[in-house]
Length: 148
Image 1 (cartoon, rainbow, N blue to C red):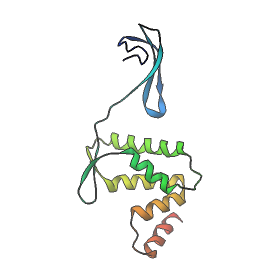
Image 2: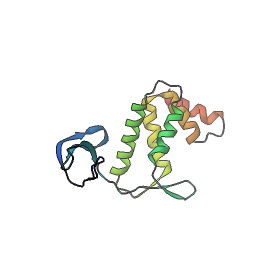
Image 3: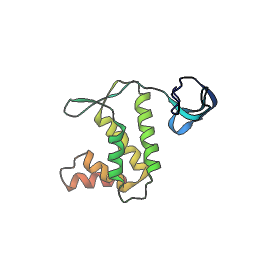
Image 4: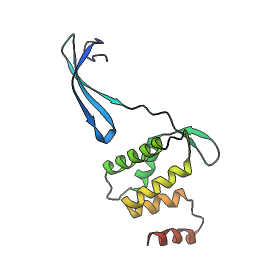
């Protein structure tokens, strides 16, 4: 670990703590050379997950896409960014724990919908209307009736 102040490669760990929300370890370090103290984080590196889109194309999992989709669904709703980030953390953990290297985008959409159902019903319906691509009002009413 390089000291950001002097560039020295040697430091000692003063304190280590688990950061439960992010599943990582926070370490306080002290540079041997200049005595500067700094913080580093150590996280588990997961193998990348490949998403198989509806059209068959493949791309690497991008948690920002899920955050943006949920943010759009929750716009002007009383859902905090902390709740959204925690939800995406849960989704990402679930995908990593599935031990699959490739996951269909529809599976991820289904997981997001289930999470949103428990967070905010309006956000759930907004997300479902885009994700499920309702063709007419009858399909939309069927989805609403599932909620009721």
